[in-house]
Length: 465
Image (cartoon, rainbow, N blue to C red; front, side, top):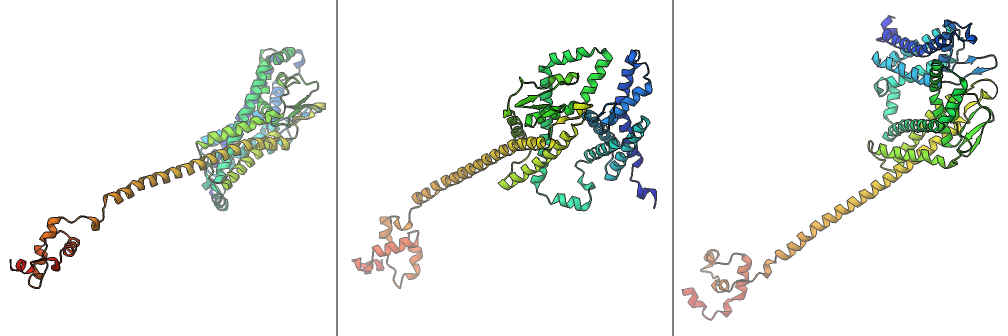
């Protein structure tokens, strides 16, 4: 078997794309670690630190973005910085697009090369755990899916035929579900930024207590920024009702806040306090967002034509939102250290995902139902107006026909014509049609009836003439 039958076209370019994305993602954390080391190398507590130590720590933090683990003397850190995960997906997606990878085999080579390079870089830093390799494969699969999005001709024949046989409402529901996830992410981001703005004095106070220099402040800010998607997931869980926890024994929900002493992380100063307990009324916000998205989407896609279509579209959208949010909220939790900090994240990811997906799709379905009812009422009104217009256009024609088309039998016969008609006889029968001056046969018969031979006093004299 030749190499061309084993390896796909552009396989080398695909492999380079995977390696390129892995190296670029690694450099983001390695460079930050080296900069931090260069800024604090003179500190008394870092007298034994070296460049390799700094790069090794940066690499461990990088593998944490793929589900790795950073072990300490007292425990371990497993809380995934989803910002690094998202960055890796974007870099690999961009590399696949630049390499013009258009087939499943090509993006598969790229994903495998990405995973292999992640393993090599992790081994060079002394990371031997295999958890990060599963995360690297997941990143490669997501980037490959986004690179081939819309290219259904690349799918196997049975899968393509099955997708083609699905109702159009399934595809529209899937598209709406993806849009709802994006809108929910924007809502959660707005909530996090609003909480940071409101709690900015507390955040500054915590940061000041750390007594960091300028470089350390920047590095610390970047590390917290890497956990921004985690914070957004916690905010959405709080908005949906189940809430989240920062350590064992804590609970942050809209109607109750139970807290304990927390680590000195500035961004935790934006956590809701007892004074911020709006109650479960906040669950209306995802519903309103779902309805607003339905209004926005209705201008770009046709409304469902029946209740069955509405049900299919809503079910597809709900399934998409549920799956995406469940994966997101599950990945947004983990351990942030020993002791109580071994449990951080969404309280119960399954319940939170079900609540958020249900609230958003309820608003979405209600809005679509209203739009469908309005469309049906408008359609009936339009049909009624059309029927009324047609009847109004037909009535004058009938009246005009009855009024302006008098019966021929009712037409009066002119008196001169009656006197000019002669009675046909055997001698003049052949000349009767040309001698008559009445224009119709009906007039002839009428004239003949009006003037008969018996009433003529001098028939013979008329014949002689």
